[in-house]
Length: 339
Ligand SMILES: C[S@@+](CC[C@H](N)C(=O)[O-])C[C@H]1O[C@@H](n2cnc3c(N)ncnc32)[C@H](O)[C@@H]1O
Image (cartoon, rainbow, N blue to C red; front, side, top):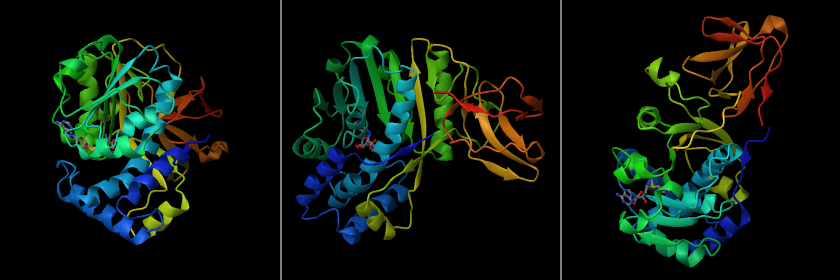
């Protein structure tokens, strides 16, 4: 089962074209890495700080690092949503804290919506309009205004790494039919998202993904530390790998915490989501799985001779003959991927 994502060629071409205005190419690994480190250090020292878009280092770092990585993460989220029909019937997208339009650009690869982008800084808009000809936005605004609220029943409120810069969703988002949020998969942001999920359910929304149920989230109610996050593989092009050699952080796999919610109820499915990496233990292998309010693990006892490693984040069909022992669902016959 392939959960690998790369950088599509048109996106790479746009990044290269935008870099030329700083007299840089994708092969200037050392300089690119220096800019990435500067923005990374900024985010580490000011985790709630505003992206300093007026700085050249922030623009370059976003173009060559955060845009491709976040776009790969979002492609995975969008794929999971599309499988369940999450985007069906929607027409408008309001991308809040759009930055370099990362989420809208990625969604527009497959979904033909009207994209309105809200971004307080002007630099990203200039970069997108000048160097990303494949993406056409309906409008860019500095703040949410009346012009955005025309058709909330057909609108997706989109928050890609922007909720982290806010204390709560803005009030207008609660009027929208659909809400898509992606956040850094840190414990703090991840747990905040689990609380927001419950708040949205209390306001009448339904969880479409990653959850397969509307019950309380077991990671929130039965653990003080866990947070839900997905993991994908990133197939980095050579220029990215060369830049990464100069950086302390490596990105062969990428994690993200996300939430897809709608006012419309999703079709029920008989599936559970794998929400943990494989854990090798004495006598057994385990993976956390979510299908309801219980915090549970699939367990493959070594003595049965059964062994499986399921990619984190995928949906599975739970076999009928699972044996429940405390918080373990012991596997007697192979667990199948749910497509
Ligand atoms: C971490 S960046 C994320 C950018 C982009 N969405 C992505 O996924 O890569 C957060 C963005 O939100 C913008 N932002 C934060 N608060 C905002 C506000 N109140 N109004 C408009 N934009 C805001 C910042 O300028 C920044 O570009």
